[in-house]
Image (cartoon, rainbow, N blue to C red; front, side, top):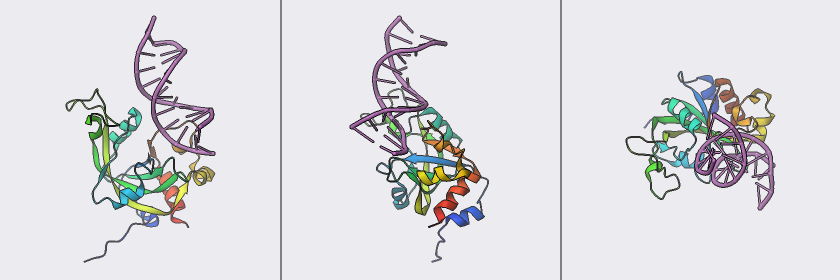
Length: 172
DNA sequence: GCCAACGTTGGC
DNA sequence: GCCAACGTTGGC
């Protein structure tokens, strides 16, 4: 069997695979982490997002888009790796689970309220790029994550910002 | 655990 | 439509 070549941040930087968009998505690692994504044998629903702006960004995502996987409320908080969008936005199944944490009483099968994409593992940084490191990099001054008061759990990043974070993550 | 900042809810 | 009260996020 031919050995699958593992992507690394540097191969990513050198060959931006296709004309794709770049994103940042936050998750608390205790809820869902890059490690959990890495261990999953199939794409995972990025469920539980209950913010309209974040939902709208997920609607814009295309299969193959890459995202920085950010661990929030972590030690330390930071970008832990890269994931890839595996399926376009579809109704978030957690909104229909009565009694569940993410139940949405307004939602019906015909008119769901919340949507989400499915994601897959792409690569894990050798060492997570901490929030402190991100802040100290002048090239990332305009990264939405770092702006005062920004709590948005999903937002676009530019290709330059994406590459810069990958570069930081590929250094030991 | 604290609290700043933001989003949502609901009375009016 | 205004806005106070409340809930949530997420760094520290």
